Length: 481
Ligand SMILES: NC(=O)C1=CN([C@@H]2O[C@H](COP(=O)(O)OP(=O)(O)OC[C@H]3O[C@@H](n4cnc5c(N)ncnc54)[C@H](O)[C@@H]3O)[C@@H](O)[C@H]2O)C=CC1
Ligand SMILES: O=C(O)/C=C/C=C(\O)C(=O)O
Image (cartoon, rainbow, N blue to C red):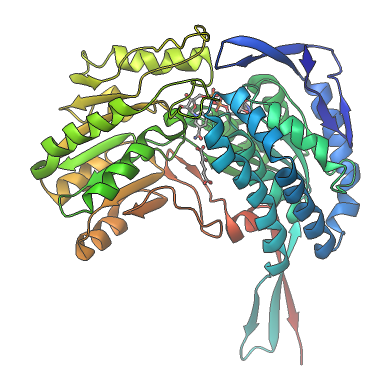
């Protein structure tokens, strides 16, 4: 069976203690590879390699760093089909989605930060009347940690690593143990791209051991993390006494507010995507749908008809809209929410069951599910389900829609469907969310700040925000006569 290896100091290596974890294929429930169950020793080795590489990498010209990141981007593109197949097999997502979204975006992340670093500049402030100038140096931080989740594996892994490297840091990174394969493929192309040894180190393993060792390492100065809110809180508790810089991109329970004056057909098509793309396993999915009462019944029947037409199938089947969920425990977690729907006052309008696919009977498949609710304060609308399950409910006024939208602990993204400019402006200002989409969803410009309010996280990624996170500002004040 194939063994995934750690990438430390430019070499692919087995874990020090020779412990391994099973890696499952969600489409058939079978173990198909092994991944290192890395210990503190492996993390320490990775740290030592990163620390040794830091003086030279942080002093490498911007042009050279940019060229290397750009080369990584092109090598991902050149090997697109290998990455696509690996991502789909490891995660259960449709092959078509990995080809259209995940892998191109991973390549774009490297290309984007290869370009962005050439435009990154720092501020100067003249103290007028005092004969003094201040200028700000923005230097790399040192060795930084990047920890990513399983839902968009290479997409989110590269979203952290690329800005960290571009800014001149060296990195100890851990992909999710549930979806390690494309990070492994990435480690195989880094040397060819000219990345000096030790600049990027990828250590595979479990969160509470390998991940914890990265976060708890006293010399790893900053942590960029994407994952569940409970994990984010634990990381914050570990890192706080060491005053580490933290960027936490956490869960979401995003509202989708649909008004009667919207462009209905466009809204319906995009709402289907925002509900079920990637099996609903995107932190930005609009899992709470609120519809203005005058169009509620029409929306309900049209939406259900479209949801019923979605094909749940094997990820490599070209007709598949919904692939497998990422793991058995996750499938069971998502199903457990459907099972409590009735006791929470909800009514399952469509879906609700596991799906068995011929030839892949042990795969992790679930029907896309729509639950109508009458009480917005229930577990189905308050907790992150992170699967192909949405709730729907009518509302009567803009104020009610706003209160429903904001009535959760999360504040990641919101979507509004309306053609009323005043309403748009009012809601956009008052919605408690880091990202507000109007008449669209998941339209991404990589220069924009990305992240959440409330329990959805701390800090922002993307564009200059990411480069600022991965640098330490130092103000220098010069007085002249
Ligand atoms: N916001 C998002 O994008 C995501 C949200 N989630 C939510 O979190 C729930 C749990 O999913 P999990 O896979 O368990 O996510 P998780 O938050 O446990 O895992 C994300 C990453 O953090 C690592 N990790 C876990 N514990 C750690 C620790 N103590 N120190 C350092 N790293 C640690 C994991 O190994 C993985 O690489 C999901 O059901 C979903 O609701 C999960 C993945 C992504
Ligand atoms: O940067 C993006 O476009 C999307 C990011 C998505 C997540 O962070 C997530 O689903 O966890």
